[in-house]
Image (tube, rainbow, N blue to C red):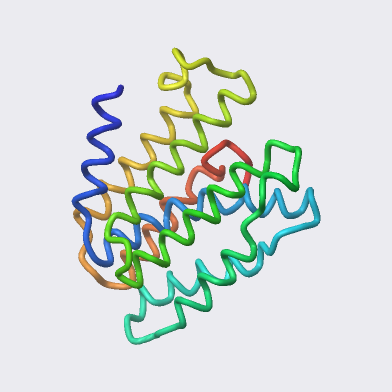
Length: 192
């Protein structure tokens, strides 16, 4: 399993341009519901700002001529990122992972972090691992073979299989988003 995991990150590292962005955005579609639930339960954060930001990235992928101010969006994400010192519930951690992932995606789009998709991939798997350990559904020894972690790696590889073969039309971007949402659950297993 560890070999496959390295292989996944190596494949993500090889993605460039729109393919890296689409892969990162697809993973964030599976991470953002964790942030949204956190906002609902704590009556804090700004789920709509993060949703709008991800929508802007998808739109820029479909219509490369459409531009938006990445700096302004990064600022909104930063303001909406929860602080662990203010919350005592576990949900703050996957919420933070989603917000950091979105910031990485924006930095990738801006050209400031060429490895942004790898960071998002690791954040998504890390969220799953942390969730399984926190809920004691898995131990350090069993986390990599837990069905939820295996599913996370499988989804990432399916998205990679798709994007590596995809040509650039907007249709590929829409299909990528649908593929990410197909299972109907977030990366940590929340129903969408």
